[in-house]
Image (tube, rainbow, N blue to C red):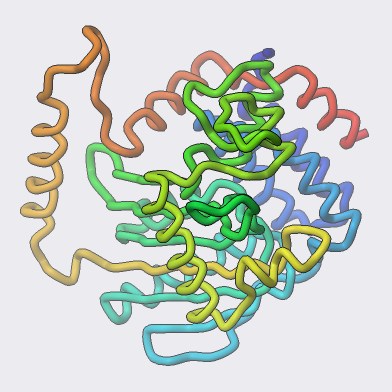
Length: 335
């Protein structure tokens, strides 16, 4: 691993995206987002994903000049079409719109179809929380998990995000419905390490912690076994119906993972006019959870998003740890 400053990473990525004919504004937004994801320790959906994103541009899955457009309006609910534009740009735009609707109506929802991978879903949870909104966000994916009891993948690991604004540090849950996101599994593979727990099935239908075997089969383990299997299916149904877009089944009919359906639901808590009470209640829950004896002496209990803030501060100070091979690949793409 090598250490890269956030400023240097963002500069390299900005020039890379300009090379691939993005406007200056879009190149800046993409570079900022990939860098922030990596700064927060999510290399799997930050710098590690950049070469794959460039591949998707080259094969035509990502339309560099396209972006999300509003299609239908139903009061505080809107349907948008992503037009197969870059997933990050579409997601940032739809999150902003959901925030606007929430501040107008108290609650707002944007259902997006025909978009591309949004990289780290938590990015948009942090974005909504920074704007003072609670958010519930999710996306479907290509099939990469078998339904519980089945052998072949028929479900997506459909990332699910919930964020809550808080003065002392936002609460942000960002989780795939598989035990490990596939980007995270690939991150372990790049670093030559095993997963800390079983994350999927190998070719012999045996649960494995070997990232190489799991990425080969693309059969991830659902969180909570049958419960995760059911939750994945429900999220796919909701995203597909609300956006009138592609399901995991339809996404899987193509050669590449594109044409996804996503939901951006925001709530504006200030409508209740009790911000002081809200902060007190959040802190009460967090303090109660922190105040527990750990199973292993010296361990600390965290609320969702707490470690992200710590990692961000550490990497800002010391530089961002990046795989040397990944960074060399990005530099070659930039030449």
